[in-house]
Image (cartoon, rainbow, N blue to C red; front, side, top):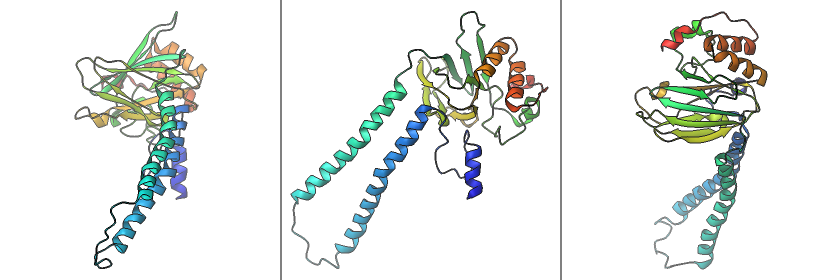
Length: 287
C-alpha cells in the first residue's frame, strides 16, 4: 500500500495502476472539482447506507412469514412529509455549490495571458498559438509517440513518457498564466473531446463549432489526457500532452519553435530535465 501511495504521488500528472481516486489537481478549477466530489460523498454515503438498511429491515421484518395478515395502512402523513422534504433539502445543498462550480468553469477570463486553438482530426491534435504583436505565428501537429520513435525523441523513459499517452510534440504553456483554449474539429471530421483530468478540463471538439474553455496551471510538469469521445478505430491512440514550464522557458521555447520546432523541443527538454539532448526527432513528423 505504501508503494502504491508513493507511486500515485510521484506520477500525479498521469493515471497509475490501481488508482482509486482523481489525479492530483493542477489548476484552481480542478481543486474545486475535487472538493465538490468529496463534499457530495458526505451525502451519497449516508443515503446509500440508509437505503440499504431500509431494504434489509423491510426484507426481514415484513416478509410473509412474519406478517400472515397484511397491513391495512394506506398512508402516513409524517413519513410522507419527511421523504419529500429530505430529498429537496439534500438537492439544495448539492445544487448551490454545483452551480458555483459550473459558473467558474464556464465564465471565461476577460484578459487571458495566452490563447490557443486545438483542432481535432482522426487521429491527432493540431495546436495553434495566437500570434502576439511582433511575434511569428506558431502551429504544429501532435501525434501519439510510437515505440520505434522513442529513442529518436529522447523519450525512452516510460514512467515519464508512458505508452499510449506520450506524444511527439506537446502543447507547451507557462505556469501560473491563464490560458484560453478554443477547441474544434476539422470541418469534414467527426466529434472528438479534449480532456485533461489534472486540469479539470473536458470539452467537445465539434466540426464547424468553436467551443471555448480555460485553465490556469499551478505547477510545472508534464500532464496527460486523451480524446474522450468515441471517434473511430484509433480513438484510443489520440492522446493529449501539456508541458507546463516556467515563463522564461516558455518564452525561449516559443521564440525558437516558430523557426525550428524540433530544436526548440530538444532545448526545452534539456532545460526541464537538466541534461543536454542531441537527439533528432525529425522522424516523428512522418507519423
